[in-house]
Image 1 (cartoon, rainbow, N blue to C red):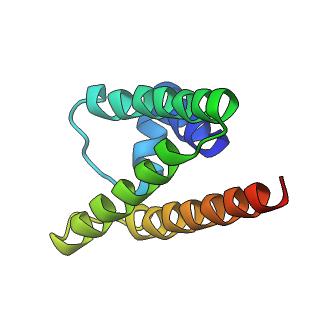
Image 2: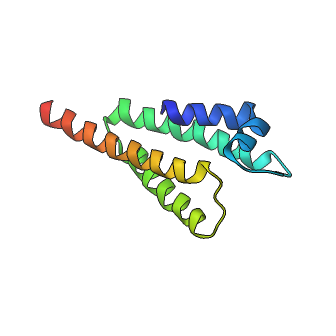
Length: 109
């Protein structure tokens, strides 16, 4: 959730810098990057609600899996500055770690 809040913050409040840092040039409108930012805030809040209310991680794992598929698809069509493969790897690893920790905690609990 912390990662998604951080990404959301950068996309919402440091939009032009964040988009340029990620490798995208000539973004004509900042609406869609900001929309992605608020999406990250909403989904991070959903992760926390699910975990603290139900001790679940289905939303987070589903979001990470979907992100990996989407990011690799964007790489396949050639719309992929440096941030895209790094994000795909990072999201994949985060999803794996969350599943591993969640299973380990359930076995011990």
